[in-house]
Amino acid sequence: MTTATPAIRLTALTKSFGNVNAVDNLDLDIAEGEFFSMLGPSGSGKTTVLRLIAGFEQPTSGTIELRGRDVTGNAPFDRDVNTVFQDYALFPHMTVLDNVAYGLRVRGVVRAERRERAAAALDSVALGGYGDRKPSQLSGGQRQRVALARATVVQPKVLLLDEPLGALDLKLREQMQVELKELQRSLGITFIFVTHDQEEALTLSDRIAVFNKGKIEQLGTPTEIYESPASPFVAGFVGTSNLFDDGEARDLLGMPGASSVRPEKITMHAPTSTAAEGIISLPGIITEVIYLGTSTRLLVELATGRRITVLEQNATSRSTVDRRGEAVHVRFAASDIVSLTPVGA
Image (cartoon, rainbow, N blue to C red; front, top):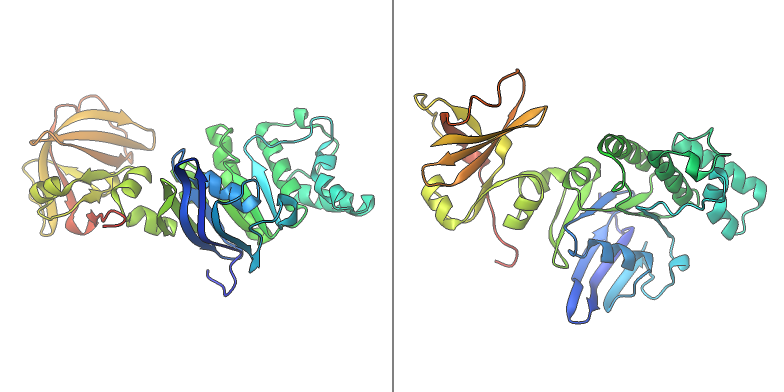
């Protein structure tokens, strides 16, 4: 998804607060029309990067380019970007239509045109009949869609989204994830999405940057990030992984170096069964069973005392109680072991 001139280019970007580098010498290109997510825990630097792109913060050093234009020192209103926040920031005294049209009003667009464009923007988020309502008359998901319509109606080159779904309940958040992706595709606008929710990033993104301590720990597609984590931090933060340090990897897996195996790659078998060639088989005892609806998570304690997490799909109904204490062999293919090389090693 690369182009000669990216939508956003960050070069040697640094933002310091006292002696702490919240963003540490960051280089990053984000392509035109890309749904790009910045994923990481609190304090990892992802939100600071978003605020630097928006112009709400000024970098300590480095440059920010928008479509090849250096906007590092520009005010927020002089950048062709718009931001959607978690709290929506709608004007309670205005109608939905007037909220959406507000940005056009500030830009001097005549009343008839701005109302027409605002109505079209509401149609794009499936709220065409809600223009006369006040924000207080809408659900949380509807207010979020109004905020999206208001941000997109001015046709920014880049839309910045700061954890916009964080305040929604699970079902509504999942629904909004689908709608957000469809909206981005239909508009063709570059979306830069900040989240700490790994599943959300995997669901929405063309590419993901995993942040840790002001740096990008790994940059890649959702498949690359999940299937081939580049470090123990990424393997542990994105999804669930069974992490093995060098000693455990040598003793249990027969290979040197930190490694990981995803729980869904592991199967459980009776101790009397024989493992095929290329399969690692480790004896253990089931110590915990956690029913998750569509799947069951099981903890298996190996002879060494190490616990392995196994994830089984619930294709058939079975008890979650009578398996505790059961002797099993956990098995996985050697090809499913991911070698982890820490950043800078």
